[in-house]
Length: 318
Image 1 (spheres, helix red, strand yellow):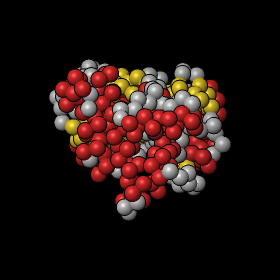
Image 2 (cartoon, helix red, strand yellow; image 1 turned 30 degrees about the horizontal axis):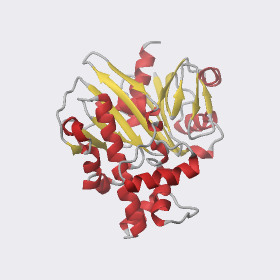
Image 3 (spheres, helix red, strand yellow; image 1 turned 180 degrees about the vertical axis):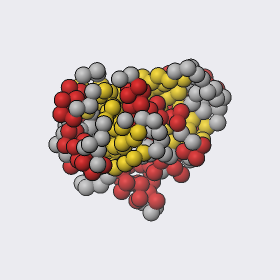
Image 4 (cartoon, rainbow, N blue to C red; image 1 turned 60 degrees about the vertical axis):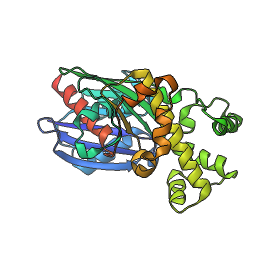
């Protein structure tokens, strides 16, 4: 029997088809631009046709989705899509359809990563059978946590990316004022995301510039554009402070794993003193941050790996 798993993103969607008996041996994999499709159903139909799965028996479909997910449907945060389980079951004839938050899937993918998939940013006390946290900036900012008790691995989604931004110095207070004028409410996602990095560049340069994105800001910083460099430095300092907050909130002795579409593309900045100093700057709780392991995940497939694991589980319940 075959399964399909998808990691749906505001920018890109990755799908795989695999056999339930050997899920690590992917039969077909493809990545699509999410915004080229009006909804998820035509994207899935395209994948099924291109993968040659029309005549295969599909035992389960597992979707990792960016947004608030319930058992029956999901409205996505950064895409104008609503996905309904019954529509997928009726249209594609797949009985077992499972929805999860995209960072819930990232958390479930973490146990399946190899050593080469991780870059250690802070070496702390590590326990295998303990709470782990997945956090990451991409189109948005996601947070999930999982518990591995040896017999079972479970993951829970959150909306932690929408926590109120907490400035830690005079520059960040000015940044907060700058963003309040734009948005009213300012969450961490307004800064720790692709659009957030662009906003940081505009704050640091004093100019709004149409047509730029996070990749442009990073490239300009590497080319010694001073405003872009200041934006990158500010980005990783805010990122470090946010990850430190997660260390205090969850006390994850299994570690914090930074995923998402941005961090793995800016490794040198994530390994900088700006990030780690901000991460450790927790006053009386600095020791707790020091004791928490922090890893940068450089395997961009972690979300779909988690979705595959869940699809296999769902297929087994059929």
